Length: 296
Image (cartoon, rainbow, N blue to C red; front, side):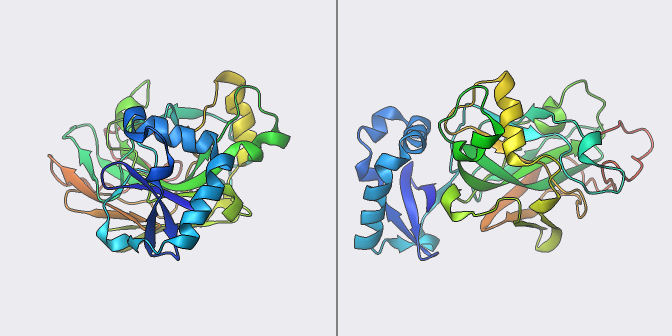
């Protein structure tokens, strides 16, 4: 099932790939609960909601996807985390040499047709959209065993980790954590529709030009290991969004006026500064003279 948010914070389910069936009426006190709490409730209690959602899908034709305004499928997750160097995209990288690590992304996820804003930061020599597979947590908690981890995943969503290169920072706040730098969408595909998340193709386009094209089979640490590791240190909650990292081959710059595309989601780019087109492939290319070092 593909679950989405649209228009004035309504909840929909995709039918036949092209129509949206509104299921908002099933959720009691939806307006009073607010957008994020509603999505957390749907995810945490999906077994209870599923039958009613399926009934509405059978009974209603919905309306064309083209006439709705899609929103971020999760408006503001309690946590949005991104894996740090988690793909075997060069010969020297092996699971043993890539320790599991994460950084926080801005939790105000940017929905389809939203604008990624690039402030004018002189130290930045290029900003790159990293296309990633993200997973959405269902009910879980602390200390989840690897053997139970996949049962704790609610679904999957396309994600961009927008990354600014060139700054020497002790944190990832400006390089990766700015607002609008977490584009996500168009919808959550529930886990039962994804038999093997480690055998998916991730593709992206910038300005209509093909960029990344890779398989999630190259993930160094697979989802069960990521969930088990994270849950040792933090309490995972329904609706948390966790991006699994990227295969860096194919990365390139983004600038004012560009469009970003992943899956069936499209975003725009707005910048207040000059074009920045430095060639930079993390872990492979040498950074431009005077720029800082970035591994991710």
